[in-house]
Image (cartoon, rainbow, N blue to C red; front, side):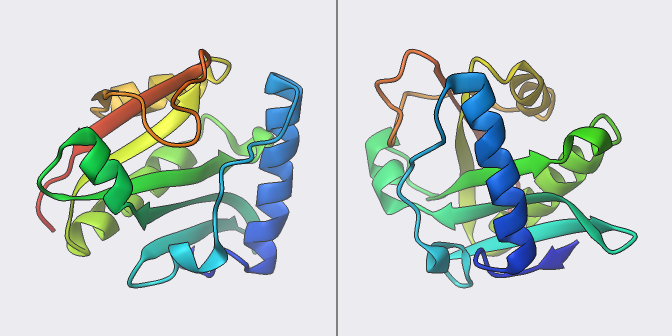
Length: 159
């Protein structure tokens, strides 16, 4: 795994693949407003996982005071974004490894909670998050009113 900027060429390549998967599953890409620098320290963190030099997985988090206030949480909150593993590398533990790294780095950066939004058309993602201790939280953010959205969160162990 490598810490990269969200505008890194490999991150952009994997993001295009992820957006295509959203089009296949939902009929349109994810249009959540995101800025490249939100995922750069100290505001966030973004990683790409590699195998034999090829980018195969990615994920990141960004601090979100708006979500913290909306959910009424006293601790700092990070929002998990752009978790993705290329299709031929799934079910090999890469997503769990990326998620574990992101949780630890967020806790080390001072976050008390990690929250995320995923969709009902991504049952494998929902299963991963639930198996890692994520529970439902009130709907928040760009897809708060979407009937296909699932909002989850997890209290992080201090870093």
